[in-house]
Length: 99
Image (cartoon, rainbow, N blue to C red; front, top):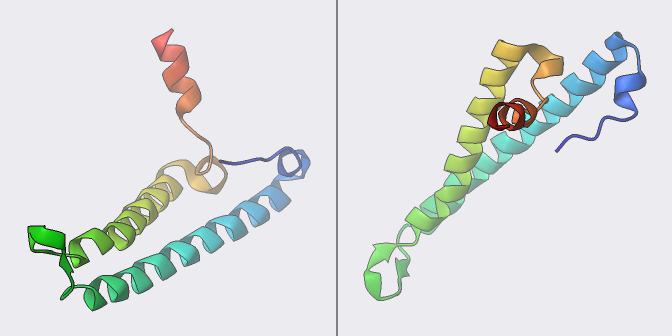
């Protein structure tokens, strides 16, 4: 979700700077989730999950794998749509096409 009521009124130079800063913080946060998520999954690998006998590590892998997919999606959007367009949703196009 992006609330850009103030940012959109700034000059394009400031918009690029603020958006780049936000994207950098998002990538850093996702990298931390990936790193510590894999550490958590590795530490829970020997823990059994109830009577199923499966490892609890499979459950904890959801966090780092999901964060990795989100990071890949963000980087892909950066290359295809640029810095400013990378955070704009595609929902408007879908709604208009459905009508």
